Length: 390
Length: 90
Ligand SMILES: [Zn+2]
Image (cartoon, rainbow over all chains, first blue to last red; front, side):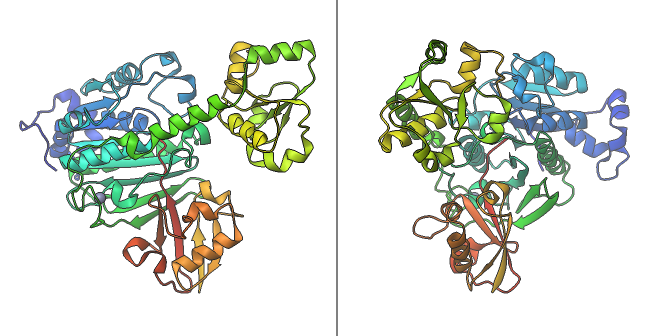
């Protein structure tokens, strides 16, 4: 592939020694290592997928790594985001990433873009790189990265994970199909839970992120058979790897008909804004009680029922004393066991599922029902810090 | 025709397992057979009209059925149908 810099960089003696295991591979060699040094790779997201990608691309000697992220390191990231350490909690991910990369390989130039990737900045940011590694965690950014890569003719090294399964491919090379050829439209918001909601095995982004990195390195070196035109499915539980053929869809609005001539509003396209407004409206429509008010009712010895609509594995992690577990999916079945004459307080992790449960109860004629604002998470913050947050 | 269906874990929990056996002469019939047996899974496989969603791709053996006739694609004994939903985690 062509790279943007025209001068062939020389390798210092330190670099030659450092990359010796590459240099003695005939498929890489001195020329390949210089290609890596010349290469400019953009990582969109330095989280689960971006962590191994950043580490291995830097270790391999990719000359310039662009990083797009605007997040701060959180303790819950460390189970899988191996780029960041405990000492980085509370720091900007880009600062933590830069320190780690510079320690790993000071020959790598890090270009930090501390911003969300948007329709306004994507072409400008992506335009200066040779290829993109998509490590984002939401559909709107995935469609944005895809369309920008198709418009700019830059390969998009795709990876995506959920629980124990992952997908990887290379989109938008000259011949290859794009992400829209695979999934014409995103699922409606809320149908597919995020990793924050559904969980993810910590090593899974390690598997998929290193596969993306392998594809990125192959593209830069111009060796092997790329995943372009194939979709790799990884099932870590069955330890099954499978590739399926991807075809360019002649009706694809991005790479087929070229109907998409500029970047669109991806939040609108993915229904994100509409869904957020609907959620907010639904939550505000149900009567609420704060954790402090609930604690006061418990302390007074008030007579009421406290219902926890989370899942049993969440109940095992933490619970509010006196609560009864009725997972959201079973609320309708449990209705005969509930007394509409009594006051009922419903809670979940942060208040979304319990708002739905309150609406279900109201629809069944219950009048004295309250949603615990902020769920057990805010209960831990406001009332009882001994209850673990997760 | 006897066909084996492979579901990702996100959908497998709505059925008995991630590997299901089904019958039919076309992909659509195979899917309807499964939808009839697992009502919770049904709305995740196809829309109310019985058509495939744009965010769930069906592979008959290694090929995307959208290029072979969609749900009208004929199936043979021993075919494998793999369901690939869009996921976005990273
Ligand atoms: Zn396309």
